[in-house]
Amino acid sequence: MMRPANTNQRLIYLLLDDPEIAAQYRAIIRELAATAFSPDALTKLMDALEPVSKGSGFSPRAFLLGRAAVVQQLVAGFGR
Image (cartoon, rainbow, N blue to C red):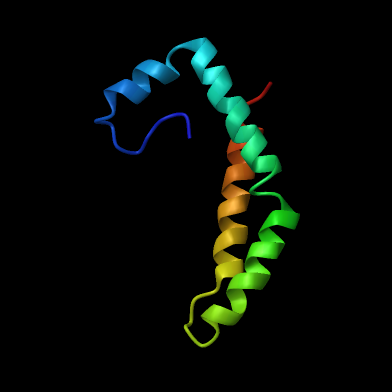
């Protein structure tokens, strides 16, 4: 999350190389991890999406839980 996959993002690299901006960015990601990617928020979203996706072969629950795990790992790697 601290380095975009597309290396042709000069502005992002310049911004994230600034310690103050990088700290603000990490704080925002931590907040999102604790709110939008929290188990409670994801459960509500998964419960709403599952009926719509039945029979499609796609599992919103598996996708969201996997994505949330990635976000939590990245946030844990930020340190303090």
